[in-house]
Amino acid sequence: MPKMKTNKAASKRFRVSGTGRVRRPKQGGNHGMQEKSRKRLRRLRKNDMVDKTLQKKIRSLLPYG
Image 1 (cartoon, rainbow, N blue to C red):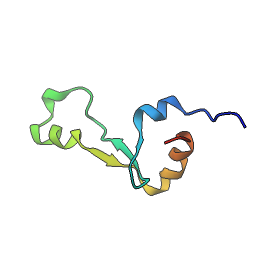
Image 2: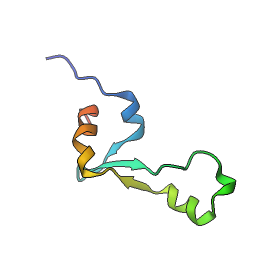
Image 3: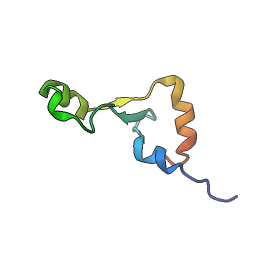
């Protein structure tokens, strides 16, 4: 059986947590920082979880995650 290929775009965006859930960064934290409040930027630093309805699809893109 050949190795499965990991989707590289997905591997750069998602990580699988220790409990098996998929983590993702919050959207909106890349540019335009001076218009956003400090409080908002602090919240954007934290990771978020992917919704359970999409987890199966993302896990298939990360076979070794």
